[in-house]
Structures are given as C-alpha cells and as structure tokens.
Image (cartoon, rainbow, N blue to C red; front, side, top):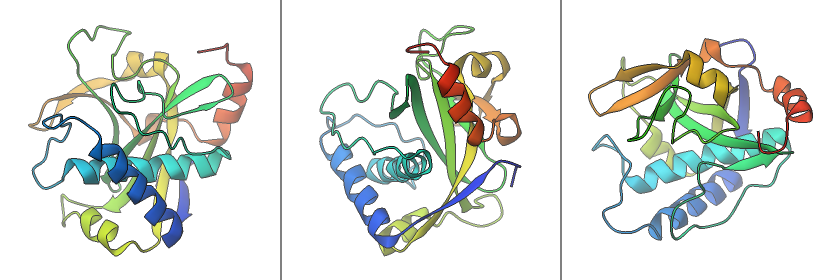
Length: 199
C-alpha cells in the first residue's frame, strides 16, 4: 500500500445503498450501451463498483453523494465537486498493483483526454488479486456485507496528461498512471482552496 493510501470501511447499509444506486443508474441506460471490457463482469456490476468508490470518496471528503440518475449523456465525467474542483472517481479492483486508467477515445490528443474533462481524478479500489487468484467482487457485492475500500490518491488533469502512458491489456487502449504517481488525499483540500473556478 502506497504512503497516503486510505482504507475506508463502508458499512453493510452503505454498501446496500451504493449497490442499489449503481443498479438504478445502469437500468436507465440505453440497451446495447456498454463500457465493459471483460465478459466476467456485467455492466450493472461495473456501475455498482463505481458507485461504491464514489461513496467512499464522498464520505472521506465530507461530501454528499450525487444521487442523480442520468437518462442520457451521463455525468460528463464529474462525480462530485470539492469547492470549484471537479472530481472524477475511478475504481480498480486489482491489489496491490493497480493503475488509475482512463479510456482512450476518438479525438484524444496530447494534453487533452475526452474521458478526463479537467479537474482531478481519484483512484479507489478493492483487494482482488486476479493475477494470482480470482476476482471476488461479484460475490462480495451479492453478500452485501461491509466493504473495505482503498482510496489510493488523486492526480490533476494537467499532470495526468503529462505523465500517463498508454497500455493495452487486450481490450482496448488505456491511459494509465500507477499508484505511486498519485498525491495523498489530504493534499486535495489544499489544492481545492487554491484552485481557480472550474479548474
């Protein structure tokens, strides 16, 4: 675990709340619209895991979770705001070696990524080790027990565009940074205080 990584426990009640919200968000999306890249995960599970990450970050920062269920266009990559700083929350279940990944999109260019529209991104995660074992996210979600989430840190968009490298694990390109390139969460408050509006 990198210095600055936070372990954040979500209670069974919080887990159930996030899972239900994630499922409701996915249910209104148009049929055939999918962002999954692995057949072993459903789109609903991906939405639920992302919502668990959002809830952990919201609790950490003392913010309310955005309960909006978007019927078209999604949230534009902004999951929450700390002051004027827009925050995108990412989830990666791999442990301990995981990356903050942003999908490669048509129109991406150096210094400008469509899937990272400014602000900062926070990486959350779980404790699966699919390289040496197997993913247990689906079983854990089905059990609705408490869930220990990890908040690995954050990075601002300008820095991400400078240091990210493109990798492909066989299901499409991803712009990636490793956890040791992220800043600790306590520094996000200071960053937000000095940030310009809509940074």
